[in-house]
Structure formats: C-alpha cells, structure tokens
Image 1 (spheres, one colour):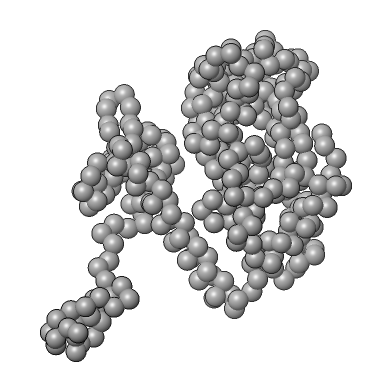
Image 2 (cartoon, rainbow, N blue to C red):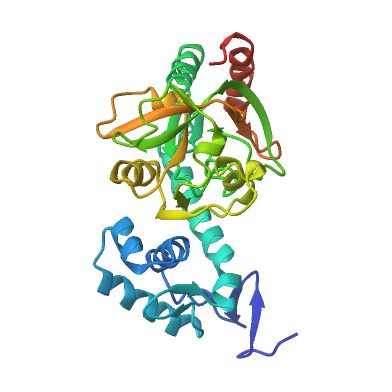
Length: 324
C-alpha cells in the first residue's frame, strides 16, 4: 500500500495518495496532423495530398515534419523523384487510421445523443456504386422506415469496402470483388464493363471491343491498396504481362480526366458510362470479360437493427432487379 505522498496508477489516471486524480498526459499530436499523415501515405505525393486536403503544400510539409519530431521517427523517405513510407511509418499507419476512425465514430455518437437517441443508419457508398440502383434502394428504405435517420457517405477508389473496415458505415453499397474477409455480401445486380477512351481514339466509335484490343494501351494506376479489387479492374487474369500505366489517380474523376486527356484508359461499369453525357469521352463495352457486381455489404459482428432491415430490403432487390 503506497504511503501518503506516493503515486499509483488507477484506471489510467495518476493519483497522488491522499489527493485527487490527475488526468493522464494528453496526446502530443492532434487529429489534423494524423489526417495529413494518412493522406500523404495514400497519395505518396505531397502535391496531390495538399490538393486533396486543400492546404498549401509548404504547410503540409511543415505539419508532417512537426509530427515526425513529435513521434520521434521519420514517417517518409523523401527524394526529388519519389516519396515512400519508412518501415516505421508503415507500421504506424494503421494505428493512425484507427484513431481517426474512432474520432469519427465519437462525433457520430455525439450527434445521435444530441438527436435524442433516434435510430440511425450509416450507409457507405463505394466509388462507382450503381447510380441507378442506389437511389431506388435509399428511397424504398425511407418509405419503409421513415423514422430512421439515414446518413450516406461516399468513399474513394482506395476504399472499396465503403467504410466498413473502419466501422464508419453500418452497411455499404459496393462493387466486389475486393478483400471482403470478415464481411457478408448480397449481390443485387451485375453490369457490363466499359472502357473509357478519349472521343478521338480509333476505338471510340465501336459498339464493343475485345480485351486484347485495349490490354496494351496505357492504363490508369488507381491509388488503391486492395490487390483483389485492383486485379479485377485491371483484368489481370487475362494479362500475360503487367499493365503499362499512363497516369495515376485517386478518384473516379481522376480516371475520367486521364481518359479525356488521352493519357490512359480505364474500366467503368455500365451505370457510370450511361449516367450522363460525358464531354470529350467515349465508352465502349468490353464484351469478353466478366461483368461487375453491385452488392450490399456489412460486418456481421456489428449490425444494428436498421442495418438488418436495409439488408432484408436489398435481398428483395437481388430478386427483382434485372441485370444489364
């Protein structure tokens, strides 16, 4: 038993015996710095990361340098030609992502409490989530469950699980295949895949093409770490050598911009190709490759009641919705 004047740790606080508990030391870095670190790690380019974050590149570089000083090790290896994560930076990255996810869940919980405990449902929309099926699912759910507060959030190409991994979504509308270990899915439709080309390309006037006709063109290198998802959209099972990349991008808009400029081609699902008129672009169906599934995914270990109702609805769409 400590004597008066000594200290002991009680439940994560330091207490002076005979005195009041004092709070544990606060974090030496803030969430903004962590967000900067994660974004640079995803882009591996300070210019693109600064553009994504809408901050000056010099401010971003200074913030990363301060964070490195605080944690006591270099996060990135920098050279005039490239940026790469250090071994320690790569090890720390998932912890930074986890902390940002917890902070977002904490904020979401605060909103729920402020709303008086009203039932809520967070729906993640992975990039290229079907533009026709998605609004119909959301409208049908709202008619059946008008008292549930629904929040949707779009996720970039780097997160094909639509926020489920970080538990930022209760359910997600996604496009498998991707690394879905630990998740359950129900497929609601299948669509053909189209190649996006600039409208002056020799193939742009065709109704269909074969994969061999586009395999050796320069492709867009999507900034995604999910190897299953990348392999599917690059059609690796049909390739005898790795694709040649002409551009790198983070979003669907990046892919379309690269195609419009003539730098690279990429594949998109039918619902994107036919969603609207895309000036400067042509979309041609790739007739001899498998189509793209649209699915609703969820984590069975964390499934609130509103999410179960959404999944039940999705299963009816899987029966009723015609494939393209």
